[in-house]
Image (cartoon, rainbow, N blue to C red; front, side, top):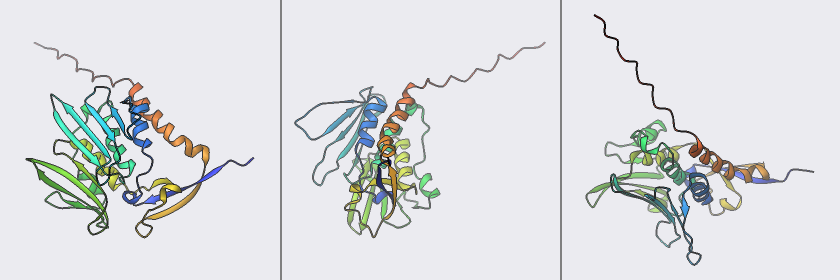
Length: 249
């Protein structure tokens, strides 16, 4: 008996690959990172809250508004927000949520967001504005209510945005860096045949593959298992203190 196979497309550049499956973010946060979800069957939205109740992700389809809203409120470190339009690839959003939900997140070093862009050949100006090699993705810093936030836009044509992403000025740099690293990653992303409908074929490259249906079905569960394993792993042992110095006469 032949193993059933399904068509999968490797899409590049990834920022024009379409949104993909929201479960890549939502199911991973809930089942893999332990975020709880509110239930409101009368509303077409998903709300997930972190175990410490300081972070919240809301997915809510809205006309001409961002679909994804990520917020954090902490009396010690303050508040920040990030938002993503509905067409933002889930691989970019999950880079942020994976970094935020990592057990070592609070100990993560402050990353320089633009370093990954320059390594990937993106143009980064002295003003901190940046653009992709094909000039289809642009990012800039905006002064907004006394704070400088990040705004990233992917355009098929001039003034024809496919999606926008925004990070408030207080967003930890490690999260912005995670988004930009995923954005500039040259690796294509996988999409089903149905998920390629509506893509701008003159702006993307599709490489079709036949994959075993069972393997395709296992991709998300394996991702969830990997995230759950992070939580189950014991924290690293503290460094061994140096032996006391011996005093000699």
